[in-house]
Amino acid sequence: MERRALLKDIFLLGITASLPLKRLLAQQKNNIRPFHQFKLGELELTVITDGSIRMTPVQPMFAPGIPSAAVDSLLVNSFRTTKEIDLGINILVIRKGKQTILIDTGTGNGFDGNFGSDSGWLIKSLTDAGISREEVTDIIITHAHPDHIGGLFNNDGSLVFPTAQVYLSAIEYAFWTLDKPDFSKSKMENSEQLKQILASTHKVLQVLKPTVHLFDDQTELFGCIRLQKAPGHTPGHTIVHVYSGGEELVHIADLLHSDALQFQHTEWGFSGDTDIALAAATRKKVVATLATNKTKVFAYHLPWPGIGHVRSKGNAYEWVMETYPIPG
Image 1 (cartoon, helix red, strand yellow):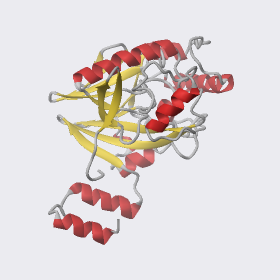
Image 2 (cartoon, rainbow, N blue to C red):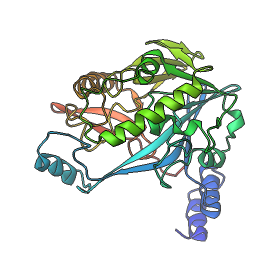
Image 3 (tube, rainbow, N blue to C red):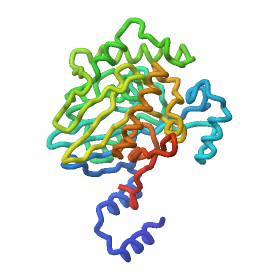
Image 4 (tube, rainbow, N blue to C red):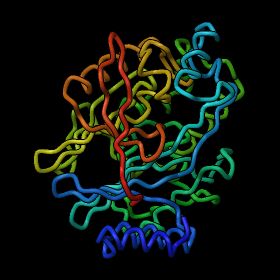
């Protein structure tokens, strides 16, 4: 929409002084990456983007072992292409007083990162949202896959956030630092890719070893976060409950990767799951709880900005995105 027409229309609605409008016009003028800010109790939350990961073909990465006709039918009925699935990389930033907390760090470009230019936008996105890397005090890692820990490091291997405290599941750390982690229950067929992931993750955790804080299931942090083990995708995969003032948001990390497929079929796995059967069982249990409790959800890989609710639909579920009249 032309800027003058946009101003005229909003003036007629009597909201010329709105902050979202100012932010929208600034984004149009300066090509700023989008960000979304909202309150949760006394907390200020910001969603920024690290870009996206394009996965093609859809199978066998998604729904391995499921007839392709069934997968394609569900994608078509959801008005999606059958050729690929784009995974968003939505990063949640929590501000509480003088603390600025990141949950995961995206793909980054350091060490052996090879995700390409469509991702690795964390620092630029933080800057566009008015957050400097020096402000980041704490980083919670939901699990140690490269698209969640890659943003911890610069190209030369130095820390992007040198003064931030990093938190990771003790189970997750123990698994990835084994000489030979067990992937016998995974459906990952690309042995070379797995070898690269193992080498990169092991290197990252070795660098972090002196300073990383290891947590257990149900650990509470900062008076606003509870960490819940949700195993399967990885052994120490963690979902993050953020709470304040009687309100709650659940960051589901990689509980699922496709809103078009895995809500209707929680049993359909993802070949990146370390234990595909356990991941499906965990997904079914957690999704059922979220639907029953009508809990607000934040999803790392679902379409921007990854905020919504889970609703029961017959014997399955569906993703209901929150909508916003004006970006911001």
